[in-house]
Length: 100
Image 1 (tube, rainbow, N blue to C red):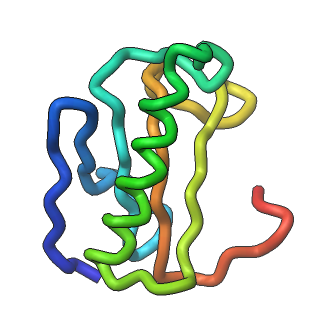
Image 2 (tube, rainbow, N blue to C red):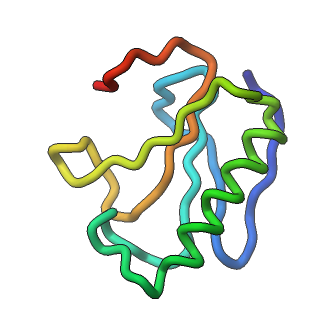
Image 3 (cartoon, rainbow, N blue to C red):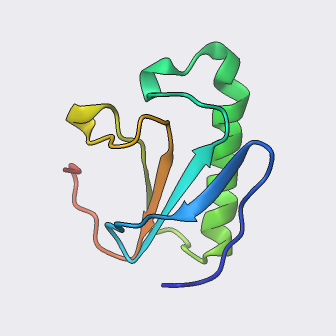
């Protein structure tokens, strides 16, 4: 799926993953540097909530309907490659449960 999308503002940006794990694989990245999920503080609550709202809008824009997954990887054990918190928005293939 190569539907065009546009997310870029003063708080975040979204880009296609260069090594996609699904036909649609978008990274939603806050501009504020937060190294890992464990580094989120109460002061980041509004930003993290905003990222979820943007993820919903992006899913709607990409017409993902009810079949997408949002993933946050944590450190090496959770396969976090880049030391900057980001959300993976994935769609277009079957997702097993539990993930892994």
